Length: 224
Image 1: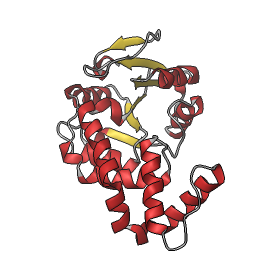
Image 2: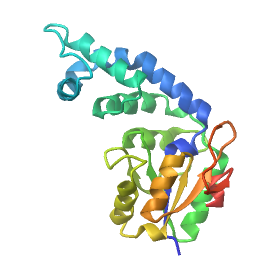
Image 3: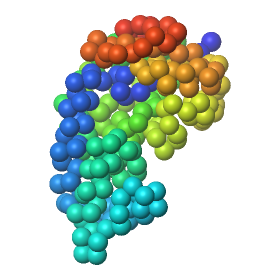
Image 4: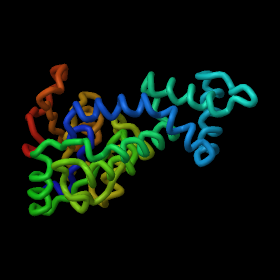
């Protein structure tokens, strides 16, 4: 008997909307950071220190703090380096455009079915929790916010790490063996399977290139 279902927002939302949001983030991150620099200055300083220690970017020149922060954020977004500052910016920008997102129509129906069967549903996404909640709250065709018992993001761990799935099961007072996970990424699938979870590989129309992987594969999460 499975009593926990783990979904990512990425697997629930149509990919063209996610692509548009990613482009929006890259094109408007600098503008947002300039407008909100005083609010996030401590996060900026902390991230610049982490980057400098890792040799990623040079320390900002005196008097150029804002533009140095913008350069650092754009560089991180360009190379998909997730960090607390980019997550904060993504959460803010994605929340503003959440109503432009469309969910696959099997998601809401599946959440209702799982609830009737006594299973709890949680999210585990690379998106910050605030962005996940905004997309679910305002996205077209999204399940009810109350459908989700908990929300997890990269602050818990990486989606390709075995311990992340064990940690989610523990946080929900269950075991990996009683947990089902829907994935669209092979590394995420192997991590969940190695944790002891049951894995379904979801290959959506428009999401191409998933290699052979040995997991049960369906076109919708309803099959989970």
